[in-house]
Image (tube, rainbow, N blue to C red; front, top):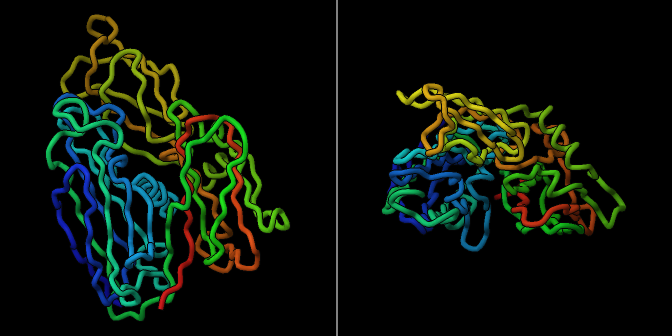
Amino acid sequence: MKTRDAVLLYQNSESDTKVETIDLNFVDPISAIDLEVSCVNGTTSNVGNFISDIVTKIEVVDGSDVLTALNLSQLEALQFYKTGKTPALSVSEFGSANQKSNTTLFFGRHLWDRSYALNPDSYTNPQLKVSFNKAAVRAASATEAFGTGDTIKLTVVAKLMEEFAAPKEFLMQKQVDSFTSVSSGDKRIDLARDYPYRMLMLRAFAQGSDIHEIIGNVKLSCDTDKYVPFDRKTDQIEQDVMNTFGVSRVKHGIYAKNSSTVRLLHNLEPDCRLFSYGDRAPKCFGICYQCSSNLFLRMYDLGTPLVVSDEENVNMVEEGHGIHATLPIVFGRYHEPDTWFNPKAYSKFELVLDQDAADGVCEIVAEQVRTQA
């Protein structure tokens, strides 16, 4: 087997709301697709508005057949759970800073997986579609948001395997449901029974709430509880995920002052280490709390000393788990296909989520083994 990188786009300019469509007209299997997205902040700041927020959908399609469908936050989280490494992220609220995400869509268990890869030759017109919405958090602005104009840049690289018989299967990743949580009651989601499952991923995000405060219990039920492969309290799942996958780490530039509330990338057990930016006067930082995708900051000027009453740039290293308020539910051993879950023997496969808080952004992503010619 030989490998090669095919550059499909390099820093291609994208408008504020656009669906970029790229043909995947290869005869060789695709192990993965690298996506780099960048965008420049307004001249003053871009508080709590991440590059991940503005890529609203990443799809691989063949006409009406959807082979992949998820957003950038979900893809970044999946990369961490697949590889154990944080994607290459440059997250900053600084004025005129260039935010960047370099993330990989894997069609196998890992790069250059000989057993699982996408075979474009199995499809009539395979395409990659990337959807942008610069105003997903707030409207573009010359000063305090993502900047106005065509400042989004997209780079796409296909990782190809040559002189190699294409695998008969690939790993298909899709968002299968999304909803806004309510304060009580079960959310029941019928899951497809067409292909085996390697993993499900739950996202439950509300800044200021832990994942388990929004969804209290996760249950998988086959044929109305004839077989229950999974029924766990979410706070226990959080600890299992921490033990299995550990923490991720990212440098995060913030624009803050005394008593600022900062949006974090990590929902669970965040640990933020702050230090003064550039040649500004040294600061003393006090953290009142750091939890639930949230940091509440005390900030003093050592030279005066007085509280810092106007926002300024602060560098921070953020570490934690539950990146983007996500939790994976892995079936069996992650790299052993015969341990994954195949629901075909059952007539109903259902996910039951116990809702405990209103207004949480909840998403379910499934990774399944998809067959191809």
